[in-house]
Amino acid sequence: MKFFEANTVVFWDVTDFPIHTGRSYLETLTSVLGNNGYNGKLKITAYGEEKPDNLGDKYSRLCKMLLDIAVWGMDTSHLSFTPKNVMVLAENIEEDTCFVHVSKNLLTSANNCLWVLPDDYEDEKIKRVKLPWAKLYWKWQDLLAGKDPMSCEDVRALRLKAPSNSLVE
Image (cartoon, rainbow, N blue to C red; front, side):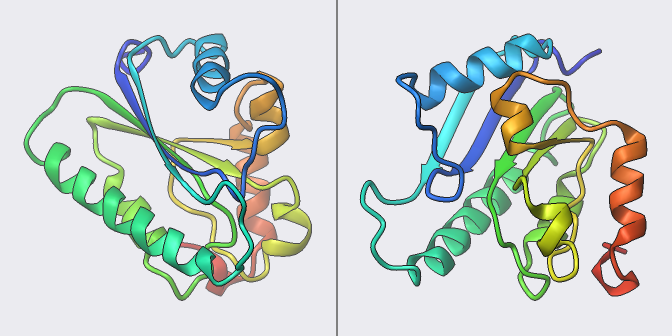
């Protein structure tokens, strides 16, 4: 597959998806992506606080991440047909944000979109948070465990569980 050797850029809300091991974020993702065949260079942009004490910072983190993703998409997608991977780790992206629409715009023949969902997405969040557009999805703990992405059948089942207004059109 053309994306296995491609560079991967990661936009990671480390407050939503923290790592509680002795390994760094770079070591963790390099290992996980490598286990799934992705061997290109890895660049991580992290969002969050060392000591998050204000839940209001979530909105600021999402806005900054959204802007960075949009700028990255404009800088890379329309100027090059070089394969690229983009991975997003962010939680609680409500349907009234532009995140899902930006994720849809990232899908091009040159981009491979990878998305990490919170472990409880299916249980509580599916009713209010749209499933972003991506080619591959992981649940958080599955990603950390080095497991394969969700199957097409599992993603299809998630889309069927969501109310029609929660599906991306």
